Amino acid sequence: MTGLVGVHAATITDNCLTRNDWLCWEYVTTRSADLLDGTREHLYITVVSVLLGVVVAVPLAVLARRWRRARPLTLGVSTVLYTVPSLAMFALLLPVFGLSAATVITGLVLYSLTILVRNFLTGLDNVDEEVRDAARGMGFGRGRMLWRVEVPLALPAAFAGLRVATVSTVALTTVGTIVGFGGLGDLLTRGLRSDFKAEVLTASVLCVLLAVVFDLLLLGAQRLATPWQRGRT
Image (tube, rainbow, N blue to C red; front, side, top):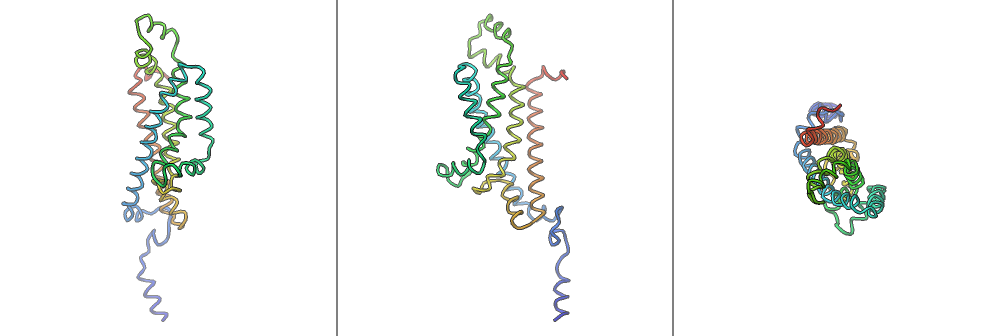
C-alpha cells in the first residue's frame, strides 16, 4: 500500500498551480478564457458607465453654471450619492434593474457624477470673463459661446475629473461581483473564497493595468484636445 501511495504522489505534476503560488504563468495560460471574459466585461462596464456619466454630468454642470439656484442642489445631491456605500447602492438598485449589468452601471454612473459635475463646473467657472465679453462682442450667442469658447477652455479641468472618475470606476466595478457582474472582480472574489492565490493576484494586476492604461489614454487625449497647454510647465 505504501508503494502505491508513493507512485500516485509521483504522478502529480509539481508546478505553480499545485503549489498554489502567487505568481503562476500556468494559471494565465490555462485560464486565459476566464481572464479574457472578465477583462471584456470589466471594460464594457467601465466604458459605458463613464460615457453615461459624462452625458449626464455635462448638462448638469451647464445648468448649475447658467442657473445659480441649481448649483447647491446639483452639487449637494451628487455629493450625497457619493457617500452611499457601494454595497448599499447596488442593493437599492436591485429591485429596479434586478441581477443585471444595468444595476452596476447605474450605480457607477451615480458615483461618477460627484467628480465629473464638480470638475466640469470648475472648468466653466474658470473661463475668464473677459473672454466671454470678447465673444459677445463678436456676436456669439449663449449656445455658440458654450461650445466654441467655454467648453474648449474648460477641457483641462474636465479631463482631470474624467481621469479620476475613470480610475475610480475601474476600481468600483469589482464590487459589482455581488450581483454577478463585477468583471475581474468575479475572479478576484472567487480566488479569495477558494484561497487560489494566482487567481487573486492576476485579477488584481489586470485591474491595476486597466486603470493605468485608461489614465494614459485620457492623458494623451487631453494633450491632443488642448494643444495650447503643451508648452506649459
